[in-house]
Length: 238
Ligand SMILES: C[S@@+](CC[C@H](N)C(=O)[O-])C[C@H]1O[C@@H](n2cnc3c(N)ncnc32)[C@H](O)[C@@H]1O
Image 1 (cartoon, rainbow, N blue to C red):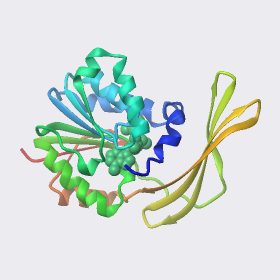
Image 2: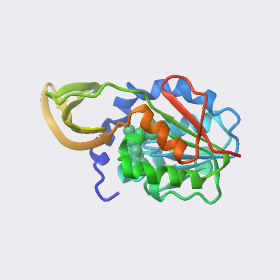
Image 3: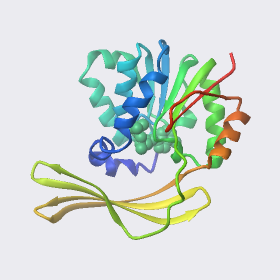
């Protein structure tokens, strides 16, 4: 990824997401991974918070796909703390559309990444994932219908103490067009209330309606499997 806007957010990532989707995924993902034994491709592995869940819950080899060099640095350093993890995880420094496993995988896991793909890219993504999965392969991702956000003022969306400093994240919806949302995030470090570091990240994310997502996946040859609220499980035919 040339434009590694994630790198500015990396120091804040685990603080914010350990307080967000990650604890819920730790509950919802393990039962869906039951029976997966040989291989998993994780799209958008980030700093490895979910990679760790996959490693704990399966004996599988993992291909961790992560385009951001900043996120990948944390991921590899996390793996380096655990010899077994280092031997089981291959980190692919590319985006999901370029991902290639050496052999077709049993399952693909994609947590909080789908929104990075616009509608045209999603069409390519389903084709790529279909090719990466073995017959009968399982696609797992988190997804929830959400109300269309409204453009508004910046709001503090996270604030964490790190020693004597406070790490603070402010988020603001700038514009909404169809399924796409433009937002601005400001990542600040404060010392005794005074800002000592500040970075702005502009992002665009894409939130397809359920019917559209279902039509895309069915059109790409996937069939829906059972999953709890908040997760989606889809399978290829055998
Ligand atoms: C919100 S983070 C989620 C990270 C991890 N899955 C988790 O739940 O902690 C989104 C991740 O997707 C990655 N990403 C963005 N665009 C991507 C793409 N086209 N292909 C694969 N990953 C992508 C980002 O670099 C980032 O690490």
